[in-house]
Picture (cartoon, rainbow, N blue to C red):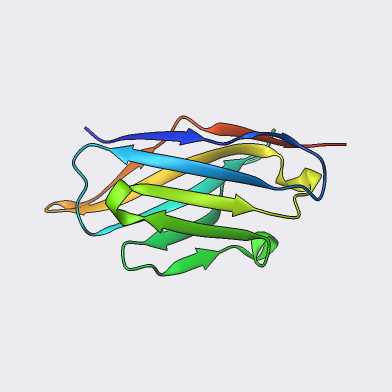
Length: 119
C-alpha cells in the first residue's frame, strides 16, 4: 500500500516563502507523476504543479515563476518551493501520486497540509 505524507505547511506573511515536502512510501512503479494540488475554502481542489519520473514539470499560470517543484527519485520525495506568497495562495495543499500499473493508472493522495498567507 502506498502512503503519502506531507510536511512544511504553516503561516507566513505576504511575500514570504514556504517549502512543502511529500514522501511516498510503499511499492511505487518507476513510471509515475507526482504533483501538488490545493483547495481553498469554498473552492474546488485545483492543480498547482506536477513532475514526472523523467523530470518533466508543469505549472499552472498563477504560480509560474513563484513556485518550483522538484523531486528526489531515490527518496520518493517531491518538494514544492513557494516564493512571493500572496493571500490567494492560502489553501490546504495536497500531494498526489499517479502510478502506472499493469491495469492502468492508480492515484494516491496525502492528507494535506495547511498553508496560510496573512498579514
